[in-house]
Amino acid sequence: MAPSSQWNYTKVTTLWSWFLIVAGLVSFIGFVFAAIISKLLPSSDNPIVSAIQNDRYYCFLVPLTLPITVIAVYFHWLSMKLFKHA
Image: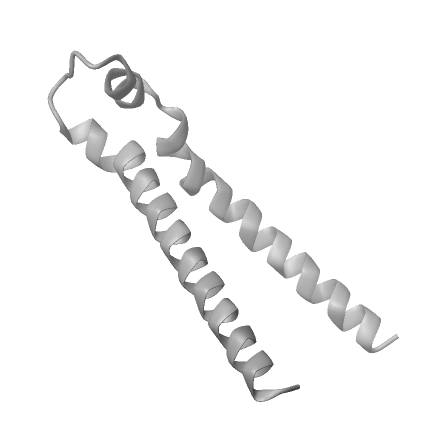
């Protein structure tokens, strides 16, 4: 690779990495607001905020997903071990 091509690749990679970090942070903050903070706020006249406050789906999403994730990780680990030693 030419030096200018390497510099351009590094610049694009850095840009995409920052984009993904910011997108993940915005998603996390939105989830925390929907699951926790909106329940602590007083009732709102805004229909969108009121719908988020009255929603119970996201409050139970993570606690109910964690056991399934642990089981899935265990089975993936087990299948990797069986494949490796077969």
